[in-house]
Amino acid sequence: MTPGVRCAVLALCAIGAPSAPAAADGAAGCGEGLGATVQRLSDAHYQLVFKTTPSPIGVGQHFSLDFALCPIAAAAAPGEVLVDAHMPEHRHGMNYRPGVRSLGAGLYRAEGLMFHMPGRWELVFDVRSSDSTVRLAQTLLVE
Ligand SMILES: [Cu+2]
Image 1: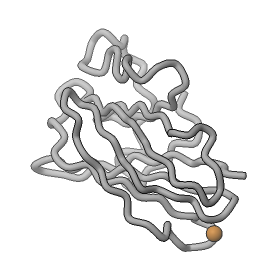
Image 2: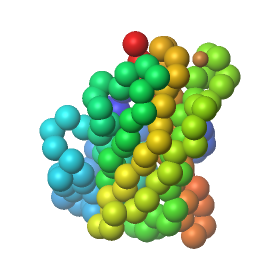
Image 3: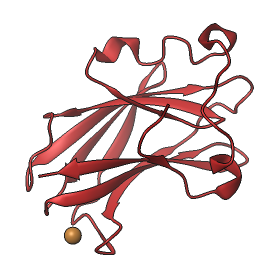
Image 4: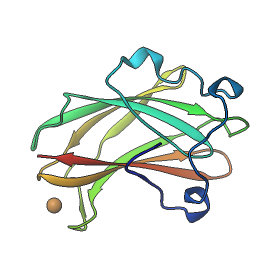
């Protein structure tokens, strides 16, 4: 189950949550170092595990994201990862452009995010590999 997960590419959305045993792919133990209070999302290509600091996110407060990105089965190793967020009902994004840096070993940190309004935000991760971009998204309710 991956509640709240949506993706922009229909072909990816058509594939359900992976039901294969976790040990069968490289995503087993993904994000183990991030602790227990994480959120997980995945599609056919990647599993992504993230946590926010602070948690929960406050309106008008800068927050950071620590996340692990784990290719599933034969998915390409991720290149660049971009993080952004927007409010689908209001058709606007953030007022800040977050920076993402790789910490190595499939771990990343995004800093400089801020949700300036309460409501429903969609957090978007664009994972670029040599031949494609995969979008993973998570809806967050901020109050
Ligand atoms: Cu808004």
